[in-house]
Image (tube, rainbow, N blue to C red):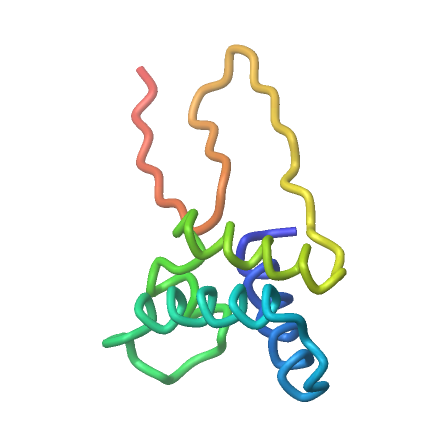
Amino acid sequence: MSNVEVIIAALAAGAGIGVSGVATEAVQDSYAAFKALLLRRLAGHPAGGSIETRLIDSGAAADDRIVHAAQELLRLTGSPVPARPSVTVNGGQGVMVGDGNTQHNRFG
């Protein structure tokens, strides 16, 4: 699952715990910290477009602090934490791993 999907899953989990009213203090604190990080990253970026586009364009999907906070919230709420795929590259050229990357190659 991509970082965007992890963040969206955490947003959904956080919204769910807010509605239920039965979240532990640790879950509430985790959600508040996650939401604060995300809102800081999104501040100043246009509100138009899909959430996926906003997360990528703002850099939120590439922010390790936000992704880690999202994974922690999912763990605390008992939601499945998506695993990052394992990648092994031998002798590769022009290989990219991650979300929202840009690459320009010149191979001679």
